[in-house]
Length: 308
Image (tube, rainbow, N blue to C red):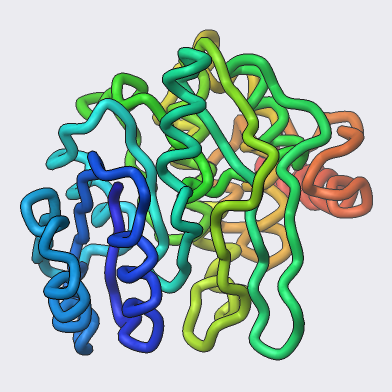
């Protein structure tokens, strides 16, 4: 279990307590202190004192602030378990979170097991979020479902076999926004079997102050566009994940560039501009049809300008 930690002293106690209270005993906990300026790490250490049985399997790694994607990679390089799961340090989990996912993985010989979750709000009751009405049977099907909004790309509700992580060839997101889908787009493709657990086991805290999802919308959209374009450039075009999700990766990148008027970034990839300028509408895509058409118009204009 990998937990990046940065500036979460208000939430980390509840998170750590829920992790150390897991009913599954054979769990490796890797907390990655990403140069956090507050008391987050001290609080983890305080909580750990109440769980002496967890000390031998708990690591707290310290590094300079490099951002969430690199913190995940630091944890991955130290992980030794057969399965990997990530937890956000401002969330918390049910006591049977790990045991349920691991038992299902072993029982079904699945490479990926994912669960439903609770959306936790500050001033209103939580909601249960169901991942899908149908379970994708394998990695390519799950990847297609993820890029068409039938399941989400979150890393914290998906237990993956560690062998899916090819750390020597894994493209690491350059920006800390929508980095989950950049990782998952590479990992899921090689999963031979995926299983859905129809039980909410994770508590996803929504709209906390200072969270990436709640501030700097324009900046975050640009970050996402940079990540998507970099992913497209990094992966082979005629084999692998892009054969399943390449169109959606480019559509997201194009829309975020156009939505933030960052035409310079989009124009830096002429082949992407040409592709989106002629792309037909994609039904059931996370980028809605009106947004797709706006992106197409912008790309047609860029293409004409580039031609001149």
